[in-house]
Image (cartoon, rainbow, N blue to C red; front, side, top):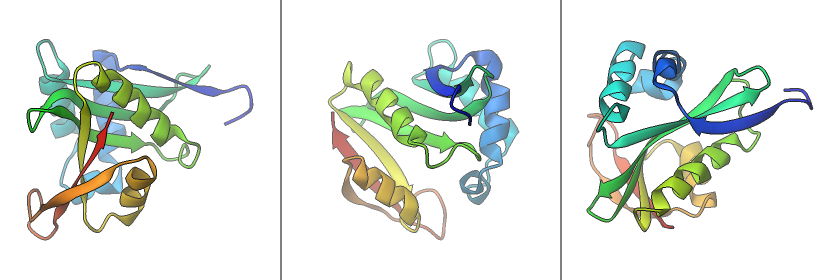
Length: 161
């Protein structure tokens, strides 16, 4: 990124969901969970389409409009008391620039209007993600054994907004 570029975070247009799904599917985390671009694109359309419970915010580089990352979340519903972070992804070439935290905070600002808490799951062995969320003020709430993958436990984290 040059000095003339910056990131803009705004709602993802449905026409971009397929491209976002392709970018997300290339990430190691999605490969571990067996998610491909087709299933991700379908899930985006189902959860974020008309009447769907979720939203996606996309980070783009200005002025090029290149996609740099996304945050996919629910504003309400988790344990009847909070929003839920479904996915936070920063695309290759945009890491370590504060973009992940900016995306997370943008989702929190959307959630706080409707829910007092924001929840997320992180695989127990994903130490970089655990450090990131703890630095961002999230507290570990518990462990869910083999919830998604048969060989991994998920940790529940939350933050009061």
